[in-house]
Length: 124
Image (cartoon, rainbow, N blue to C red; front, side, top):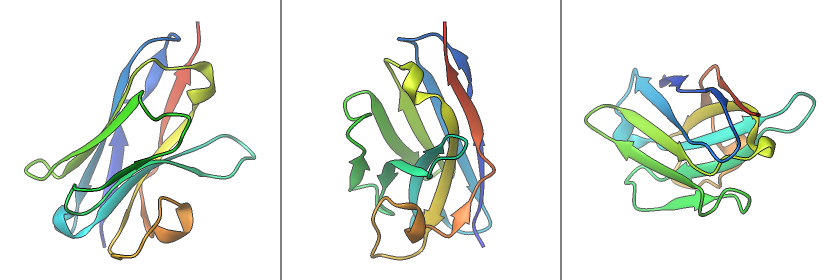
C-alpha cells in the first residue's frame, strides 16, 4: 500500500506563496497518479490538481489554473504543489492521494491511498 505524508502548509498572507510536498513510501511512485485535494469543514473534498504516473499529464481546477503548479520528483518519491498568488479562498486542509488505476479523473472517488492532510491558511 502506498503511504503518503504531506508537509509545507502554514499561514501566509494574501498574494504569498507556499510549496506543499507529498512524500511517498511503500511502493514505487512511478506506478501511481498523484492528486492534490482540499477540503473545508462541512464541504466536499475538491480536486485541485493531479499528475499522471509518467508526469506527462496534469490537470488543474479552474480556480487555481495559472497560480498553482504540480510536479513530481521520482528520485525523491515526492510530488509538489507550488502555490502562488494565494487568496483567502484557498484556505483549506490539503491532502495528497494516489491511484494505481490508469483510468482516473481528478476526483476523490478515483483515489484510494490518502495522506493525513496539511492546513493552509491565507489571511492577513
